[in-house]
Length: 257
Image (cartoon, rainbow, N blue to C red):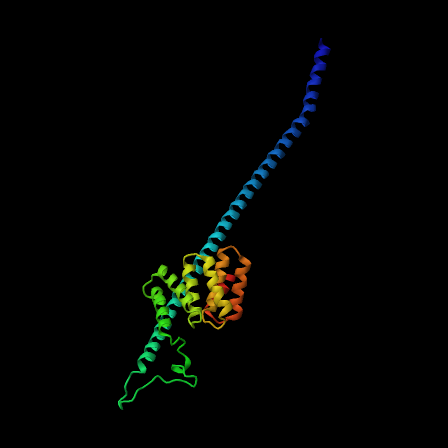
């Protein structure tokens, strides 16, 4: 019995010593797993923050693009208002010249003679710079159509007026302007296919028209609105190439950028 107790007393410390390394290894492995889990959580949190920052950056970029588009649209509309004002001044000047031509032949001078508007060698009034037909019915028809736009603001009534003018006076010197105004009116109504036809007519048939640059620009805008980006870019490039110093060229460059 005494021998048995002695043997057991020797075995207990040995068993304890044998189990000690196993417990230490277990604690070490648990600590490593905890650290790995902590690192994984940190990486997930960092990735989440990066994704959130990327989403915010994308949203900001979209907002900037929208603001840029709104700014460009406002600049374009402002230029359109200025263009309409210039058109109004041109029409006033043209009408004044017309009144001078119509009234000049009936003005009596102090010597009782008849004074006339001076003409150049070609016989045209005002040195050939008046730019309008001597056909009074043609002038009246064009004046009525223009007045519906610039004075009365009756845009719906102006469209058939210009259409009738084009049909009635197919050889008029006002024809490019009539097509231009029809394109403008239909463009404002977002009737892009109809507007495109008139703008294209000015571009193709009237290369010397002072409306041609704006017609090219409008064709680019229409192409852009209809999702034809390559065509829009081509029209903008044409404006910049053919009218480099014009307001339309500056607007085309903004849209290209």
